[in-house]
Image 1 (cartoon, rainbow, N blue to C red):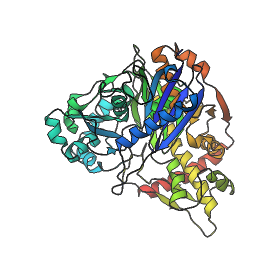
Image 2: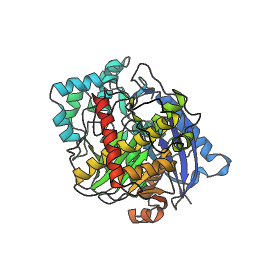
Image 3: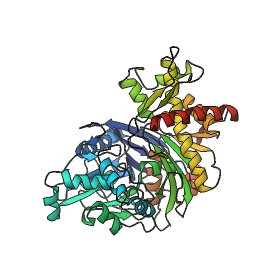
Image 4: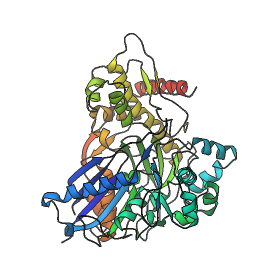
Amino acid sequence: MASYILAIDQGTTGTTVALVDSKGRLKHSVNNEFQQIYPKPGWVEHHPEEIWASVLEGIREILKDGRCKPTEIAAIGITNQRETTALWDRQTGEPLYNAIVWQCRRTTPICELLKQQGAEPAVKRKTGLVLDPYFSATKFGWLLNNAAGARKKLKQGGVLGGTIDSYLIWKLTDGETHVTDVTNASRTSLMSLRSAKWDKGLLDLFGVPASILPEIVPSSGAMGYTRNVPGLPDGIPIAGVAGDQQAALFGQACFSSGDAKCTYGTGSFILMNTGNKPVSSRAGLLTTVAWQLGGEKLTYALEGGAFICGAAVQWLRDELRFIISAPEIEALAESVDDHGGVEFVPALTGLGAPWWRPEARGTLTGLTRGAHRGHIARATLDAMALQNVDILVAMEKDLGKRMKPLRVDGGAAANNLLMQIQADVLGRKLIRPQMLETTVAGASYLAGLGVGLWQSKQEIKEVWQAEREFAVKMSAKARKGRLESWHGAIKKTLA
């Protein structure tokens, strides 16, 4: 009997392929990294064929040694790095250029020009997003104008484009299916948030032809079938797709309005479920689609993201050589009582929500002769937590209600010190799940619902389990002082 979900978690630095059983348990997972390409300062690219190769290698590894027979796979679920944008040849499938990654800032001048032309209010009203190089629309325009031969192929009807979910579905179906789910479409700045359709006015504004774009479909339900994929039989349904942060929200069973999660990865991303109506932010946050189950209304979310979270630890490891491996940061930070007045604002690729200052650069302030590696390590963990406080406080103001306990996940959520710092500076209890791979969980749950492996969200709630809770230990007075010091450092960064 087909009882496993094959989950593909296509991330920024690598691809995880996992097997999840009918009880929602992670049976096995493998990760394969691929090359990060930095052609110029602030530019970030991936080669789509390397991404596809990492998926195929993951499938091969996950199925070896008889862990699961290919015929036991009921469905495939996909979750992916969002906003990353690719163009490829409709006939051959060959990429026309490297994919432009969500972190890439090359289209900042285009965004600034559109702001000067007064385009931002309409973009935000229609999409829930701000005008920023983070999103896909200006990446599509840049690729069409700069990929060799793209304009000529476009005239001949030979160009397809999309976010990474679309590319993977196209490859898994051997070019038969060109679709994207509504969560990924909502991150392009090209989709109307209310109609869940491509918006002609936005397509014209950004110069993106509708002919290259995928069809927008719900996040759950069969949307394509495997064909000619090495190691897999033809006909396995691709039945669940969501951008990584929306998948994490679903994987954390945040099914009620006010439920929120924070994923600690390369960046940190916070989403709060706001129900079936989009909530416009007055505090610099994004309104986005959380998911759409087949036959149901759209569910929306408020989102705030810090571009640098775990990447700050990687920077200490790789560039400053403070540590040899990322987990060492916890012990180094614990070697001091507190940050000792040192503040690190990790604006290494600009500041995201709620500031939206792409030109901002990182600052390290408050250094004295007594400051040492431990203080900088502690300031780094503090910063990872403090930038989330600004986002969550803004969410509460926008939603008009106090948030429930925050659910946490992602690689850095395994850091107990970081989680305690987050609970203290936020003043809210944190809940960490047993299955930290919540993006994998979300993709699996969506796919399982799509093929009837689970019948309802209530069944998924019963599958989800907590591993540990972090109660608040910091006094309100100490919290106020810590936030004042942090905001002083932010002001210096933006000066």
